[in-house]
Image (tube, rainbow, N blue to C red; front, side, top):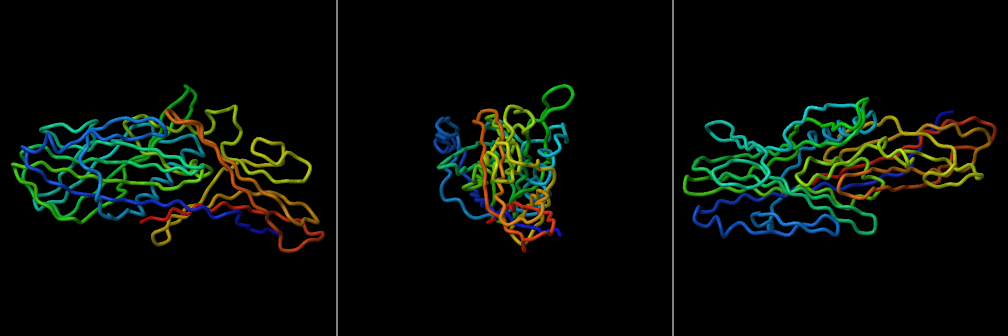
Length: 330
């Protein structure tokens, strides 16, 4: 008999907020401010427009799901696209056609572009990743727009026969807004866009895409950290083993996943198949993950549960213990 058993349903919240600002050219120097941003206990400064009073945008659920699927495929297979796409871009829809703001490292005069600034917070093993995409037009251009689209790509470091290599997802639309505005020749335009993954348990960092960013926070897939066996592993307690991540309980690696879009939710199912034997009652299951980073510490986590087969006795059971991850988009 085969029984599908849901180990746990973990939830990550994804939010997007945006603000569009036009300022007179003569106010430019006093408009931009040095803003202190934080990556855990380290601060850095960025020259940015005000980042308060952001309004709700629309997350492109299908686009975000595509990035997550490509990212996880790379994480599981350690193969993928090695040609680097642009880290980000904004596309403005105008009556005269589309205007594309390409990625740049910093806000500059006489330029159209998108700069990226990142923050990372951690509290009791819950993580928050924030990405500020700062679009700007400091040229003499004049136009009106009815829609702005935000595109981004994720990345990670893997391995191949030559050593380490960086893999990338495609550049995909992740959010859009329909705030109408007009830029005149004597004004500058700024678009402040915040994309935020909130309160992520440590065990789910493995499933959370890391977007390309200018401060070099890059994940390795688990194969790079060979000294740690908790890359993505499920252990089953037989009552005669060390029931812990990296312990000696019977276990299996995680080799595949399924992803679906359900309304505003992106649902990932990660199955692990194990033979439970005969006369089985309750089985303890431990799901462990770990990810190494550049410019962040190694992040590992686990979640556990007790699964109960439908009946006990002399029936031989195959259990599919499934971790479900839901990205709630707003």
